Each structure stands twice: as C-alpha cells, then as structure tokens.
Image (cartoon, rainbow, N blue to C red):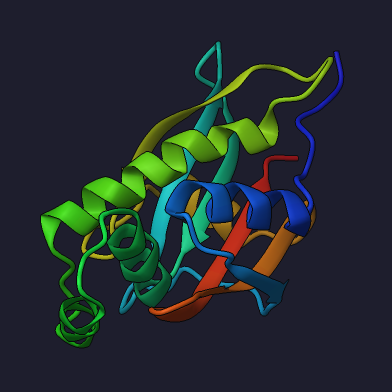
Length: 161
C-alpha cells in the first residue's frame, strides 16, 4: 500500500471551486504557523485505524470566506465576524462540511483510506501533537486561497511523515 498522497494545488482549487460554486484562485503561500494567540482552524484526517494521516490548517479569514460562500452568507457579516474574531456558527458548520469533503484529496488508488475526523477552531487550543504536525516541515503545501466576492486567506495541507 502506498502512503497518503499530497494533493496538487489544482486538486485543491477544483474541489473548493466545485463545492462553493465559485472559481477560487489558489497560489503558493507561506507556512501557516500554529501560534497560541491566533491558532488556525485545524482539520484532522485519520486512517481507518484512527492514526493521524494529515492536517489542513486554515486561517480565520479563509475559514469565514469558505464557510460564508458555501452558505451564501453576506460578505459584510463575514468580514464583521472576522474583525471580531468570532465566526457565526453557520459559517463554522459550513467550513466543517468543506473540510469533510476535502478528505477526498487524500484518497487515491493504492493509498490508505483517509477520512475527516475532527476540527479545532481558532478559539480552541489544539492538541500538541496536531499543532506540531501542522507546523512541521516536510510533506506539505502552503497556499493563499482567494474566494471571489469574499476575500483571501491562507491554507496549509500537511501530511504525517
């Protein structure tokens, strides 16, 4: 069995565009660090044996824009929520659905089955092993994602070694 594949930026763009019904733009970005003062949203993906396989980290602005775009929430309200550092529950639920479907990015022929397990929000303190994985160097992709009509934010896709 192969190891979990790192998705391409095109695969990420296509998946997000299809989900929210808007042609998102994806470009290379900087590493999204997990810092206690402003932790990103962290989606954890596991194998069928509940072993951590990958993490997707998303900063607060992108979390709001993806969740808002999926639910067709007004951009003004999302921008206000981002400024207050507190997204509405509906945007967080929508983001969780986006990240659940994003598990497809890790599943390919001969690769171990990977599924969405959980998400920590920017208000949570992530488990130390998940935070360490999200900040690790190695099999990762760091992106700037622009959601038309909303704005842009950062995303990192990190695979466990």
